[in-house]
Each structure stands twice: as C-alpha cells, then as structure tokens.
Image (cartoon, rainbow, N blue to C red; front, side, top):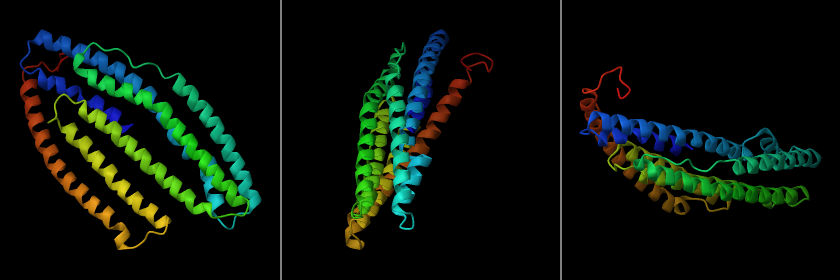
Length: 275
C-alpha cells in the first residue's frame, strides 16, 4: 500500500525532465500529468480500501479473541470453541465482502501522459495479484482452523505449528510488499531520483524484518542458539551495509534534485498553474 503513494509522488520527475521545454509545452504536459495522476490516484484509493479489508482478515476482535483463547491454558475448551465459531462466522463474512470488493475493483484507467505508462503497468500487475493474495489468506485461515480444531479435541501438538503458520504468512506478506515496491521503483524514469533510493531503503527495512521473523520461526521449531541464527545475522549485516549506502545516495540525489527545482521555479510566476 505504501508503494502506491511513493509511486505517485514521482510527479516531480517530469518537471525536472522538462526544464528546457517551452512554457506552453510544459503547461500542457503538467495538465496531462495532473489529470492522469488524479485518475491513477483515485484508482489507488479504491485499491487501498481493498487492501485494508484484506489486512483486517487477521486483525480484528473476533480473530484476536480466538487466538488469545486457543493459546491460553486457563480458557476452557467450551469458551475456546465459542470464540472459534465466532471467528469462523466473522471470517466467512469478511471473505464474502472482500470478494465483492475485488469484483467491483475497476480496470486501471487509461492515461495520456506516456511517461506514466510504467506506473500504470505496475498498477495493472497489482490488480492481477489481488485475487491470489486473498486466496492465500483464506488458505491460511483453513490451516489455522484445522490446528485449532485439533487442539480442542485434545491434541495440542499443532499449537506450535500455528505460530509457525502466522510467521510464514507475515514473511510472505512482506516479500509480496517488496515485489510491489520493486515494480514501483523500477517504474521511475529517472533512476537517480531520490524516491528510487528511498524505496530501496523501505525494501531493506522489510528484508531486515524478514530475517527477524525467520529467527523467530527457527525458535518455534526448536532451532535455537547462535549457530542456527548465524546465516540470518550475517544477512542482516549485509542489509544494513546496503542501507547505509542508499542513505548517502538518497541524500545526494535529494540535494541535486532540489537545486534543479529551484532553478526551474525561478522562471515561474507564483500565482500561475505551473507555479
């Protein structure tokens, strides 16, 4: 979701690219870009609404109560069964509403400004992946239901597996977010634009979190100690080194970009549309 707004923020890039264009050409370009960005932004708002619904599948009172009850030894089997049934009903209703929202998600709007084609194509790919992402989450719900049912029947062996399933889902979600960020990052016409490095930093942060979650997953399946974590900690060190380099590049790129914009803005009237 965050990557949508970052992608749209590259509307500054065409300005920098048109520094030497005639004023009327710049105005026409700005008008087209503004109209196209408005349309893409409106579609992204609808897309983000769907993403919020998807996130709430496993972030709602019914699910939280179910999870707390099933993992709390002091909660009776009867009470846990009640919370399990409540979550099942809630999840079924949420999935029904999510399916409707996905069905009602409109096609990506056509645009006139060809410099934004890559952004539009990125949104097209995101649109294609929505249904698969929703199905993955529903599959996880089925798995959690099976584990809970098994535990309530007297076999608690699956409870540790429940934690692993949740960690795997978190890792998968972050990997998917990084793929979306990669699409948005590569859509930037100017690879030296500050946002290119900033999106890279967001990916670094996600990769670091993934390694943390992998360590937790290892602990849950009994792989503990420094030796088990060695590969993860080494990877985390490399991620931090790469992030440090990107911070420097982002700062340098930002300074250069601001200088270009300042030079361009001197030729504009403050009360004009372009200004």
